[in-house]
Image (tube, rainbow, N blue to C red; front, side):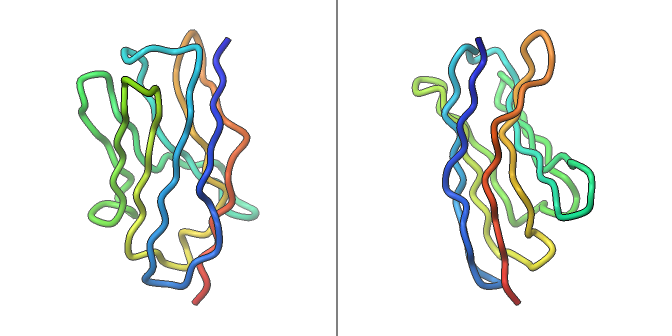
Length: 113
C-alpha cells in the first residue's frame, strides 16, 4: 500500500525560502516521484518530478527557484523552494506513480507579499 506524508509547509514572506519533505512507503526507487500544487480556486498543477535515474522536470514557473531531490535510502522526497512569490501560495502534494497516481494529504504554503 502506497502512503505519502508531506511536511514542511508554512507561512513565509515573498523572497523567502521553504523546504518540503515527503516520507514515502510502499514504493521503491524505481517509482517516479514529484510535487503538485493546487492554488485556491484552481486545478492541481505539476511543480516538479524526479525519475528513478535522477532526471528532473520542472514547471516553467518554478525553474531556477525550486529544486527537487530524493533520498532513495530513506524513501524521502524533498522540494527546496527559494525566491518564493505570492503566486506560489497553494497546497502542495507529494505524488508518485505505482499502478496509478498516488497523492499525499497535502501541506499548505502561504507566501505573503
